Image (cartoon, rainbow, N blue to C red; front, side, top):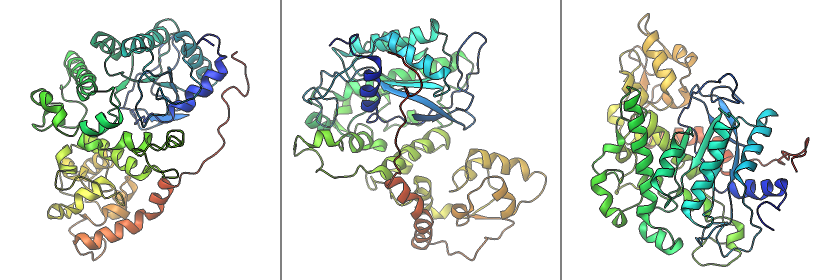
Length: 430
C-alpha cells in the first residue's frame, strides 16, 4: 500500500511506536503566549512531555514522519534491513492529528522526528511542509520540537528553525570509529553541521532581539577552545569524540531494541540487556547544568574522569570533587556560588538572594524557599553553622547521598508501565 492507502489510525500506531526510540530532551524554555484566532500556546499546562518557561509540564504528540529508512544503522529499529511494517505520514495527516488531538485536550504540542525516507533533503522538505501548514494554514501556536535531518540542505533547516520552538540533532554515537562500525552511511561532519547551523541561527536571532548572543545562561560554553562546536576545530572532528558530554546516550537507548537483537548481531547487546536508563537520566541532568547553571563541559567530565557516578546526580558529583569550595554561607554567597550547591536551583537561589536582604536566613527559611536540604545540608552553613556536625569528606558525604538517592535511582531503572490508552478511543479519524 502507498502512504495514502494505509489507514491513518494504523499509521499513528506504527509511527508513534517507532518514535519511542528517539530521545527527546526537555524544552529550552519557550514561552510564546496564545494568539487570538490561533490554536495552542507554549505557556499553559497541559504521550511525551516537555516544560514551559515557568516549569510547567506540557504534553506532546511524539511521532515519526516516517519509519521507512534508506540507511541501515545496526542499532536502529527502523533500519532498512529490518522486516517490519513501514509507514509515512503526509503533511496534511500530521496537521490533522495535531489539531484534532489538541482540540480534545490530549496534547499541547508536537515532537516530530523521522527516519531518512528517500533522502535527507526529501525528508526535511516534507517535514518543513507539515510544520509550515500547521503554523500558517491551521494557525497552530503550540510548542513544536523537530529533529533536524543531517545531510539536509542548509536553507531548509534554517527556514524550519523560524517555525519551531526547538530543533535538535541525533548525534547517534560518541566516536567516529563507532559511527563507522555501526552506522556506515553516516559521517561525523554531517552530524555536526546542522548543530552548528542551529547554534548560529539562535545567536543571530538573539542579537536581532537585542539579547546577549550567548545561549541561555550557559556563559558561552560553545566558546570553549576544545569544543567540537568551535569552528577552528571542525576540520579534525573525525579524530576526536563526537560529543564527550553525551558519550553514549543515543547508543544506549537505540541499541537495546529487542527487534534488533533478534538479528544476533555481535555488535549489539545480548537479548535481555536492559538500557541504562539511570545513565541517560544523568546525561540530561548534565545538559541542564550546562544550559542553566553556568557549568563548563570540562568541569563535569574529562579525559581522566570520562564517566559520571550514576549513583548521584552530576552536580553532587562535581561538588564532591571540589570540596575546597564548601561549605558556603547562605547569607553571604553570591548567586553564582549558590547555583553550584547541590539541592539549590535557579528559583531557590534567587529567592535566597532577595530574602536575605531583609533578614539573616536559617535552614527552615531556605527549606520553605524550595532548597532540597537532604542534598544541600552537606555543603552549606546558615549564620555560620552547619545543620549537623558533618565532616567535609568525600567518602562520607558520598555514602550519605547514595543512601538518600537509592529509592529514586531504583525507580528510574525500573519504570512502572501502564497500558497506553488509544488516542482514537472516543473518535474516528479514518
